Image (tube, rainbow, N blue to C red; front, side, top):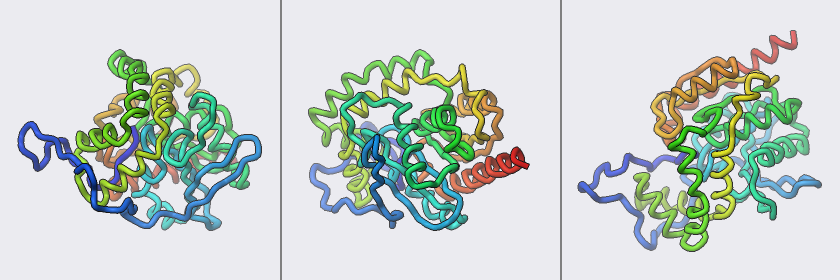
Length: 309
């Protein structure tokens, strides 16, 4: 439920009926990112562990980006790094535990711990309060961070996310996470390759990089994150968040419906900004997604200043 960089196309686009665009068994390309990423760093937090982080540096207002399920900081936010930095922000993006280069604790993955990880990293770097931006699963983590660590959040921007995934169809899907975890543990290359094919990601340099990023994930933690999303429900407490909130609705979203995103905004009392893209296009269509994202970040900053006046 995270975003996918450029190269994703609708299933079946440019193929014969009944076929799936599929990566070959041995891509000839090395897993080179499609663009220059911000500098990488490891942040050690004494009571939690070591965390992988993208960090543009600088003295601008800090913005922490939280990625979606089955994604990584780079897979979700590669298309936004440059525009956010150009707007004057210090951009940070963490890999959640169990995802890509994220923490690998012995304990089961919990979204509240992902929120605490991001908060702990910001405190360690003395960059609080920061604007917290969460996409998809990262939106659930951002809501928890705003609830449990309000001192860390100057504002919360949510996109492609919801208050819950308790509807019957989605909840039933998340109950199958045990089978997903086992399959990914036994045949990760084949499973991720098949998933990329169904998403329309081609046998290209970019496809090889995406596949490489997905192979970094922990099968056990990916499955547990899916269970956590099935358990997540912020409806009892979302309206009590103290940091200002804004919502960027992905208006053609095929995974988290725009209706659920607008319900989220209404419950949080948040202004709505619209991006004309679907769930997996926020990187490939950065020119569409990034302007409303920047407007939402500016909106929570103005609201925080107004409250402090």
